[in-house]
Length: 101
Image 1 (tube, rainbow, N blue to C red):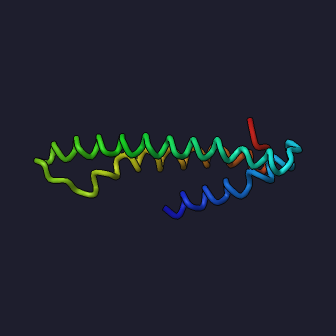
Image 2 (cartoon, rainbow, N blue to C red):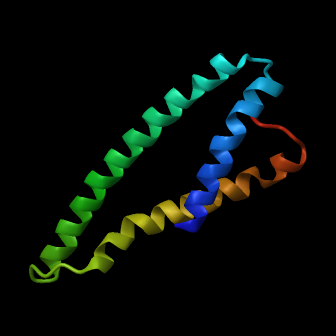
């Protein structure tokens, strides 16, 4: 949870400086990029919640109708691997001060 919070805080605080500094956009236009970010995060959380519920119901059925909190970790494992992969992919880019490939 701490890693996710840290990644989001770094992402949210660097967006304005990237678009204002690199792309020379005014503050008002650079702030509009948060709309797409908010829509994407809302959509991803809705998809993850529905997927997690389906996985939980399936595993609960296989366990004789008894649910356990550990059943919700399966979808979290995939997202953890994905986030580590995305961070690892962007590490060389941070030293070269490039923002998009």
